[in-house]
Image (cartoon, rainbow, N blue to C red; front, side, top):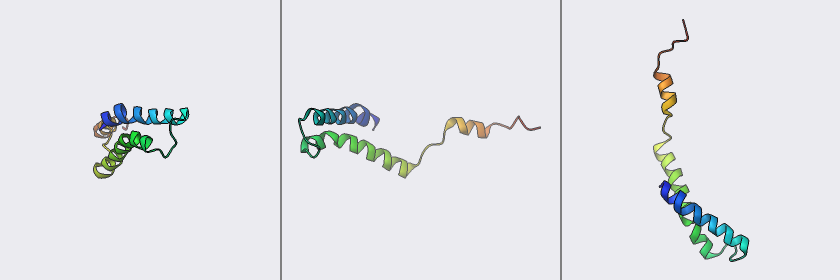
Length: 73
């Protein structure tokens, strides 16, 4: 999932932005929409995963909660 977004989706979305700046297409161009589809899929997967599975607790905070409280006497 991360490979799809970071190594495929982001460069293609960046390329579509550059193409818009250079005047090679307008914002509603079909080609530019196709270039941003992997980014859209990646963002949707992250949202669905976090909604379905939830966020994982931080292992650092879990260790702090499990350790005995040595500060109180």
